[in-house]
Length: 211
Ligand SMILES: C[S@@+](CC[C@H](N)C(=O)[O-])C[C@H]1O[C@@H](n2cnc3c(N)ncnc32)[C@H](O)[C@@H]1O
Image (cartoon, rainbow, N blue to C red; front, top):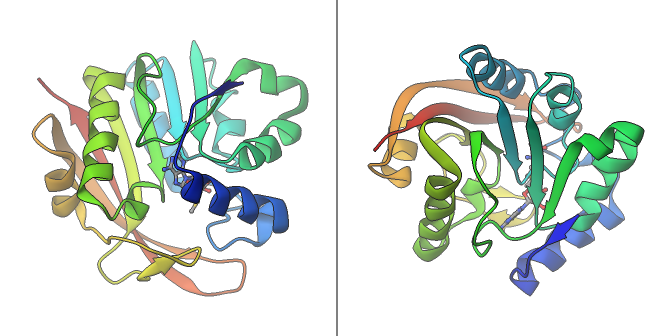
């Protein structure tokens, strides 16, 4: 497990969430991350051999990634407790994954990956400087031709998540926020139903690293 310093505030919030709530009772819990799986699988079919799940937390996406016979799988999250849930669930298979504890806005380098996946992390970055740091890391991590799969709340999605304010996007606004080094290939809307039965509108976008 690699550890990087992050902001105390964001780390504390997320550590507390994962230490006080069951992974399957948080609002963003998905029993099967179907849309993410489909979009990442399309990149793998097109030749991708490595995937990093940014802000993966306790998500079960990594359970599916380790079955894809990839050269490299990593999960980065500011909460060690969140990653711990996923590691314990994977058991022996956890050794096939690089677990990176760090804040996406302050980690310098995670190496190169073919696919960057993020569901419900970028939308927490309400400060332009944090979004810029995120984009710089994504640009460093993906070589030209690499794939960025990102999901955020849609314009008609909730204004807050886990008690924190979020920015909401459609595909075009995501492309604008990610800047000229990413080309929008496709976007789609998805309705997520929380464990409590509330519907939340998401947008998923797939972008190619250009340049
Ligand atoms: C809403 S949850 C989504 C978790 C997972 N992607 C999913 O779809 O189930 C947000 C996740 O992002 C992580 N996170 C929040 N801010 C972060 C940051 N600045 N750097 C890295 N991870 C962060 C949290 O710890 C949490 O696991």
